[in-house]
Image 1 (cartoon, helix red, strand yellow):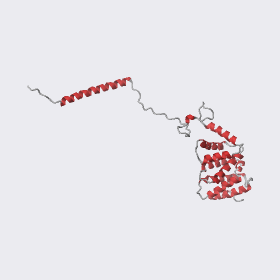
Image 2: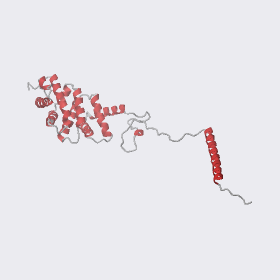
Image 3: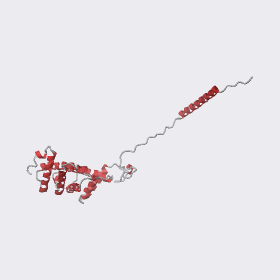
Image 4: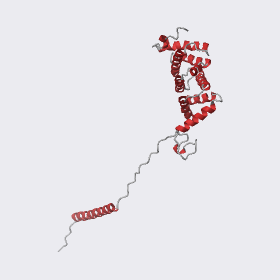
Amino acid sequence: MTHLDKPKLLRHSNPVVRLVVTTCISEITRITTPEQPYNDHTMREIFQLMVESFEGLDDIKSPPFARRVTIIETMAKSKTCVLLLDLECDDLILQMFEHFFAIVHMNHAKNIVASMQTIMSLTLNESDDIFQPLLTILLANVRKEEQKILSATSALTKSVVDQCEEKKKPYLTTEMIVELHKNSHKEDNKEPWQPNHSCLGKGHGEVLSDEEPKKELDTTEPPKFKEEIVLVEHEKEENSELQETERKQTMEEHAPSFEFPK
């Protein structure tokens, strides 16, 4: 325990060594919770390693995958994620949420998804105030759910919000609605919170678009001026007369010659 927090181990160049050290320290933290086993600076560095380990949870076939699962399950069961709030590690909390939303997929085992849900819900419930960047991430995934984009990410978002305490839900809902309204582009004459139906496509459930509809090109020929019409008609008459003259000449040249008997 007294040797695991050494910089030469925490900052080892080999990622496998760092992962093994992180696994051991996560167990130590579980035993000592709610007390910290190390000072604030060291704990922040340890949590940095834990959050970095979560990024590799998307590769379920990698050899270190089992260790990463152990770390996330230990954090969820021991509730050591609450220490991130005590240390005011907002950047690590934000990074952790981003990792979870980015890597979660349908092939993950239930225990992994459940650990993600527990960690995120605990962090939201125990926080005195939900800072804006974290709220923005939640909002982005709520939009996916509203647009009927079925994914593991939107399912995770819904479950996290559902697991929040009742005292947090009104705050979350209100803040997310306000943020959604600020970032939406609606016409001035529309009622508040109403969708802009002019942006909807023909198909039901199409994604909204802020792009202006393309104007169709007018392929019809512009009307001709009166002088142009007269000129065209005159050319037609001349061509007709010329064709008639040529026809008569051709007939005279090929006509048989008859001589009347004397």
